[in-house]
Length: 462
Image (cartoon, rainbow, N blue to C red; front, side, top):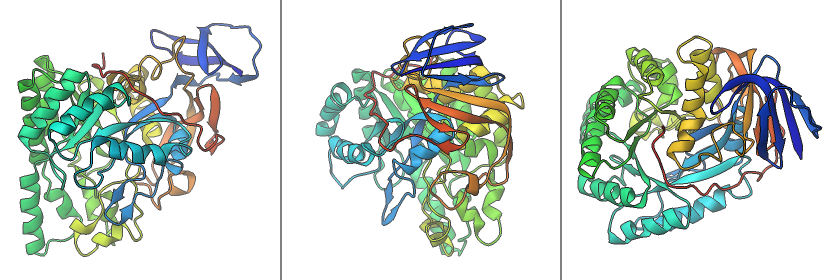
């Protein structure tokens, strides 16, 4: 199978040009101007951007929260991702039974994804307790299973303490892997949750007030200190939501520490006032960390532009408003945490970032594709348009105007947080390994086409 993409504005790894891409047997074989070769399919990309397929490094498909299961599985979720310009995901596996080993959840998630995912996929290991057996097992996960990143939580039931976090950081550094961390101060959160419920403060806004910016920033600073004690172990902070956290991260980066920051579209486009929407609509936005005061948004955009934030992922964790989220109508603590976004990440960032001049096209590509590929051991196979790379390609029509709505999206959930947002610029074609799987917002791929990505050792983004 051969494909020739003609006359597009190509954002290749080492250059930008108006030209052509020739693809053979799922691989990019030539990039140039006026390529004159026969092909099974010729695609005209005139006046459009041709960029590497998006890599979403933070999703939660099939995740179970008690008796509630996320509405997107590896089929519906990756179909939505494809229509939004994402060609690979790295899913954060959910917790398994108490006391289980690392391989337990890996086996479960392989069963979830294989034969279902329409795009390529990998997993982050999940650490829910730490002992010598777990630390030893990490080597096999990295060397044999291709899992070169692991997540720890500083809150929730399976949180780790500081000593355990330090052991994980040291061990993963030894193995050339990376520690990703959900940073919130568990003591602060529990204190305020109990206080608010006791005082009858049950509305959605108290979710945000129970998890103040300081609770996140303190945990970020603590993990930076632990990573430093661990010999400058690589540290990846997931879903940074506020500038108080970024101040610690920027200081560490300026000191040469190996600290990488991820944020998500919800923190760039939505703010804390959403929790005050009438008829308990604010439950739609209960996620952790919560939405913050609006002043954080421009500051986070600046951090992206300055490369202090290296990745924009989604934390896609979809639960229906009707039924699932409404469990919190009489007590915000009963509402499952999470919101959808796997399909809207690239359109939002392109329209609001590139088209409005907040970031340039190169920074956009770095945030949504190249940096996550480099950080998580997928580069140079993924994340770039380069000869020899997989032909994971997205074509964006910068003149396409779209109004986001639940009705036009493919996410298997009954709302979108971005309902009614008007965008300029939208993905019109998504290709995975040389095969077009979405065109003009219509999924054209096949269930189970996606392949597991065995990842190499983690590295800095640049």
